[in-house]
Image 1 (cartoon, helix red, strand yellow):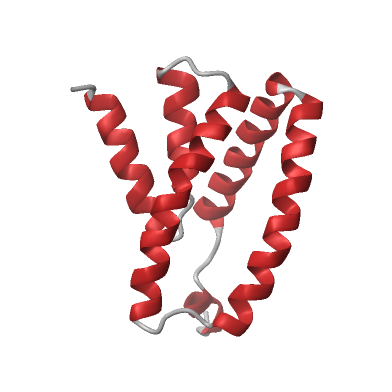
Image 2: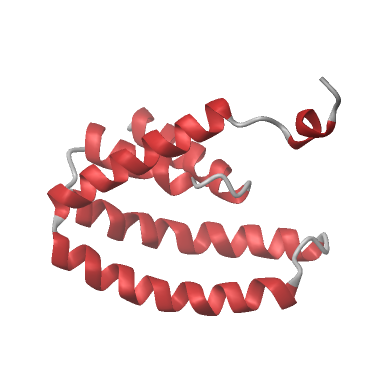
Length: 125
């Protein structure tokens, strides 16, 4: 058994089901550890995401945790974004895409590291 693949898949699925962007974990594994090119890794990530998203959607829906009036327009515009992003990814190529992805991860990490909790903002100092 490939333990790195098992762990990457498990963590990606768990993070994705919690809404934490499990695709980032999977992309890092595929490009850094499995030696897959960025564009190919993105395709694999999308295939991986579909069953995970379906399971998470069913569970969250069963718990009445999805506001469909908010979710459906987001999903429709997300489909438009997926078409545009797929076209753009093929146009700019894997090397630049890797750098954009790395920059996005750094910015997201810094934001998470230095953001203050809303509860802290409302408290008197």
